[in-house]
Length: 145
Length: 249
Image (cartoon, rainbow over the protein chains, first blue to last red):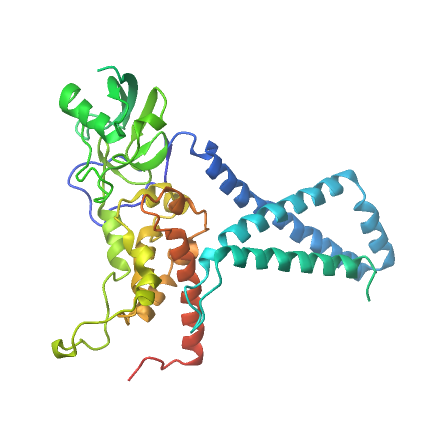
C-alpha cells in the first residue's frame, strides 16, 4: 500500500489504541481519472519551460538584431519544434479541462442575476477562445493592422 | 439457490495489539447476484470470521457509515453492487485516514475539520420568538440545498489528492458545509467563515482535481462548493478593503 502523508486526517488527540498510518490504494496513480489529473499537474513543468523560453526571447530582443535572428534560427531546430508542439498540446489539454470545470465554480447568483446554464457558459468560453485565437493569428500573421 | 457465484474478497486486516502494519486476508464466499459489497462483508463476519471489524448501519446510503475503498475506489459498500465487480474484490479502509482496526478508520480528525467551519446558522442578533419562523423562498433554498445533502461519509476525503499530502487542508466536505451555511439566507456568518476560508490549508489549497465530486454518492458536488467558496472569499476580502466597517453597527 502507498502511504498518504503520515499526519493526514490526524485526530486532535491520540486515539486510545495504536492506529496504523493512513494509506493510499496500490497504484492509485494508474487509475484513469488520477492519470489525467497528474498529467494536468505535470503541464506545470511545460509552463515553467515556456517561462524560461520567454526570458530568452526578452533577452534576445534586448541584445540586438543578431541575437534575435539567432533566436529565430534556433526555433527551427527539431527539439524546439517538438517543445512548441508539446506546449500547444498542454494548452489545449488544460484549456479543455478548465472550460469543463469552470461553469460550476461560478457563484449561484451575482446580485439579482442568475448565471446562464452551464452549457451556455461553456459555449461562451469556447467562442471567446476562438475569437482571441483568430485575432492573434490575424495580428501575428501580418494580415491586420 | 442457482444464482450464487463464488468471489474472493481480499480484505485489509489490522489488529493494533498484534499487527505491526495492516495486512490482507482472503475469503472466498458464495455471493448472490443482488448482493452489495456490504452484504458480503456481513456474511464474512456472521459466518466465517467474527473478528472482522467494519462499520455499517442503515444499508440504504443515508447514514454514511459504511464507506470503504473497494478495488481502490472510495465507495459506500451498501450501495456498491457486487455485480459490478469481477471475481476478486479488494476491500480496504478509507484512504487517507488512520486505521483503528481492520476496515475501521479514525474519524476524529474529520470531526475537528467539520467544526472548524462553524457549521451552524450564525445570527448577528438572536431572533425573538414573537418574530416567528425564518421564511425562505424555494429559490433561496435552492441556493444551498445541493450542499446540504452531504451524509458525512468521508469518501471525498479518501479520494482527494490534496488531503493525502496536506494535513492542514480542511477538505471537501467541511468546506462544502461551510459554503452551504454561507449560501443560506438565514445566516449572517459568511464574513467569519470567509476569513477561515482565506487561512492556511483551506479553499486555496484545493487544486480542483474534482475527485471529491466523482466519488460523492449523494451528488453533492463538493468541488463546486469549494471553488465557489474561493470566489466568495476573494470577493469578501476585496469588499472588506473598500468597506472595512461593512456589517458593523
